[in-house]
Amino acid sequence: MKENLAVATLAPTFMTPNKVKGYSVDEVEKRLDAQNPIEGVEKQDLPTPALLLDLNRLENNLATMNEYAKSQSVNLRPHAKTHKCAEIAHRQIAMGALGVCTATIYEAEQMDKAGIGGILITSELVGPNKIGRLVRLTKKRPDTMAVVDSAEHATQLSEAAGTAKVDLNVLIDIDPVGRRTGVAPGETAVELAKTIDRMQNLKFCGVHGYSGASSHVVGFDARKKHSIQYMTPVIESFRKMQRDGLPAEIMSGTSTGTYNIDPALGMTELQVGSYVFMDIDYRIIGGNGENTELYEDFQQSLTVLATVISQNYSDRATLDSGLKAFATDRDFGPEVVGYRGVKYRFGGDEHGILTLDEPDPAVNLGDKVELVVPHCDPNVNLYDRMYCTRGNKVVDVWKVIGRGHG
Ligand SMILES: Cc1ncc(COP(=O)(O)O)c(C=O)c1O
Image (cartoon, rainbow, N blue to C red):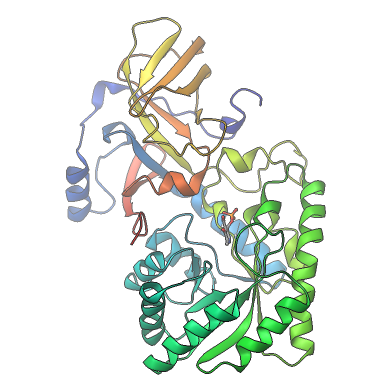
């Protein structure tokens, strides 16, 4: 990868430590309670590592996806597993999304508490604990939907729903690539859909089919080919269900990487997630526009702010942000914003090493450095809050309400 590819469109922000006020997390939040926007709190005042969200970029991303979906007459139910944040979900819905998807019942409960409905939980909820909670959530919010991929699971859902005297809305989960959950497309899927449709207290609503293997295929044409190859049998199964008289209204799936490919295939809903933040992983898949090398449909709005805590050598410096500050599931690390000749490598649980090769500007003890994250979803999950910024100003603090497990 070329040096600093990810930072090309990020405006450099050089932070001088001379006016730093140095707030703790509690102090920032106290100031937030007292006044909104937070008077006088700048990025450099924040305790690090801190997760930063550039609101101008976020808003651009939301608008871009929204306009595209409208232009294709396809609905949006964006995936909240990416942001786990009520404020972002509310903005997505205010712009026209039907609701949000969640990966877990815990995320769904947190979204519900924050006043968000229209929730589709995209992983199978199995066992009395999770099924019981789905039943309770559906009693409160009858538009909640869940996915199912076997007759045995459907029977469990049907029995729990019958006992609770509620109807559960279900989508059949079809696995396009044989990758994780879901039933194979074709006759197996159609037969299972018919079985589900006959079950008491289950309301069959359509198909969930997510081709995660297509999302990061490098090169737009290759990605398009991949998604068409694997999604076509899923959508054909959906159409067959309709032809056979099943009440299949929803065909939901699609990632940020295929948002401009799948609608033409016949999706009725997009469950795109990462577009709100973008990350290095997505930026390098290549786009469909003039720049085919980088994927620039959406802007990188999410960074981690770190502090240089040791600078004793000319060729390296040490940050306070290491394995606990970034998701480590990719074979590349974070990218430094706004510097030439500076690269990051992991240096341990709490430390990151900056390697310096004629750095411009110079890297000094105490400097604040912003880094683009390798993979946004698991990175957000490491933080309790996102500090929302406009330029250098911190204007809000949003909680990551769905993080962890529950
Ligand atoms: C089931 C499901 N739907 C949608 C998404 C959103 O994909 P992306 O974040 O790539 O847009 C994911 C992400 O992993 C997913 O697992």
